[in-house]
Image (tube, rainbow over all chains, first blue to last red; front, top):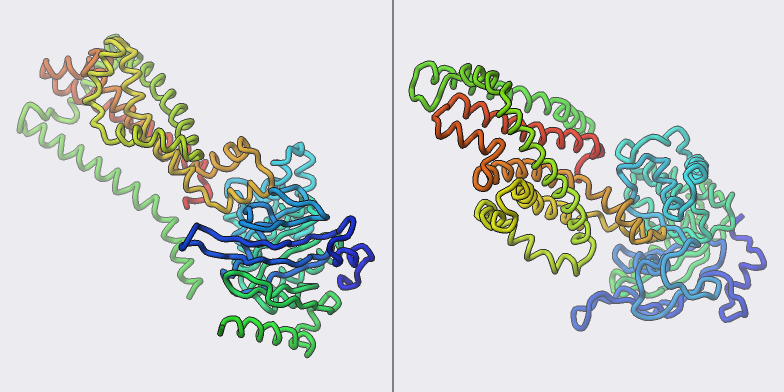
Length: 273
Length: 263
């Protein structure tokens, strides 16, 4: 069960310790452009993220939560503030993190296997080894038998599985997922959520940051939900979801729906304002 | 509803090559037929019957003069075209990747894209002399810039998501160029090369007619002044065939390399 914490992950919630574990978002602000035309996407965001948790960034579309994720990925340099991973400030992308993209970002000229191996290829892993790891990663996301298929031959859901396999193949400590299920249909989305849940349950040590605007998805997957208010993104509320996994049987339970309702209330309030 | 639409879409795609190929072949055959009739009717000596052109082609194709011209032309063309492709790719990739390189070269590239290239041929002659070198340079000048422009456009339009993906997995600048940008820009690059090889043939003929009267240019000039219309057309059709073969060869590569469909 993911909500039972190991001793280490409990200490991570205490910031400022000698060797703090986990991720600390420390006063992150970000804006595009300059002067009058500047658009503030994040405004002095601070919160800690526990190791091993699945933390969801939930908020309305375009609220800046993806920007924050990309800042953590090291793709965007924030205007102010810093991100600490186990006490070290990040300065760019690193092998400890892997990103799963909303639009999959697969190479259309490579088959599923080569795509899944691409992260390792960029890191100079020899061909035989990286293909072996990629094959295992494809098996993890249930794509065995599709190794030779090209992205244009796969459905959106399968393409995203390849994208997830590519990230998993690099064995990251932190998995960053940017609205990974936004471009797939509802049915595929559900199956994918359940698969991801199983996968992460088996791989407890991976820390996952998950961006979504789906309340149901957030409650279904998360250990903790960070609710963002819209542009510039600010942390509205932090909500822990204490249910045991797998959560499929309790999707319609009163406790589950109560959290859904509460989140809905928070987001609606922000919208009205 | 959706299913019906996608089914229609598939059918449309399956039939398209047929739909294009057959009319174009018919059009060419019809044109040849009209030509033959006009020729036989002796409307003007400028239009000999099509069959006369074929006979003339068979007659001159065996001569040393023709063979030498073809070899000389193809040599100059191959050298000029190869340099244009390699250099065009390199400059295009750099211009697409680095803003500074783009700013520095773009005015020049635009200038040469807009310039009537034939007017520059005498300048080329002044610099490179009246030998075969001038022909090589002319082929290069005609073909180079379109390859640069298309390659640059291709690199600039690579999806930001792919670039971000590369960066997030730690791609070095060289890896980014080789494994992502170059490959993703392939559709535009090959379009540029396809247009470039045709322009190169144009450059070769213009060069051979205006500078060194050798190769195909020599044949065309000679037959024109002799009013040997059948032979002249035979040479023109040979050049046309060369140009179209090269263009469809690149088109073939295009379809094999860019199998995933254009963006």
